Length: 199
Image 1: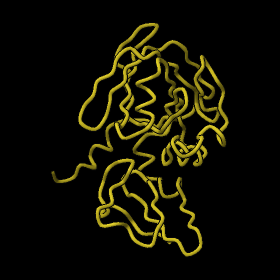
Image 2 (image 1 turned 180 degrees about the vertical axis):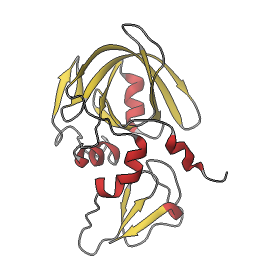
Image 3 (image 1 turned 45 degrees about the horizontal axis):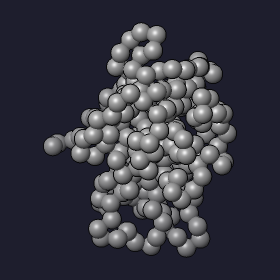
Image 4 (image 1 turned 120 degrees about the horizontal axis):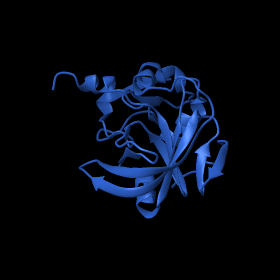
């Protein structure tokens, strides 16, 4: 494979997917039918705790992020697990149909889960749109924009005497003097050779 970065040219947005008791950043979202209540598909990594939560919940929400989004939202929902922190504690949300949606977003879609399809690394969840609203009519953040600007979006702050290793694919940050030999990114699964040392 010569250069799989071409996949970043697929037009995708950046969203916060939320469901009861959790949520994460997703980019692989697509409308797959038309009508008053269209079907929306979203792909979620199997290693992600939100994947487990979605299997037990009937509803989920997608909050659409824009290019001026508060970077703390991406850091909170992209690089942490609800197993470790309450992601909703420091991010302003509103509950709609029993699901948290992100206030600092362009708007939201509430979906009723109707199907799921497993593949090797991800689960494709399919939901029927049951509620939606738009807060602002601005340009959404694309996955390509995120990749091009992630260093400024996710400015790395390091603790004194700690080194930060930043994943060049997704932006996950590992703190420590050295990366373990067998280290793989817990978010996107790449090896230590795709981490960049900072600090």
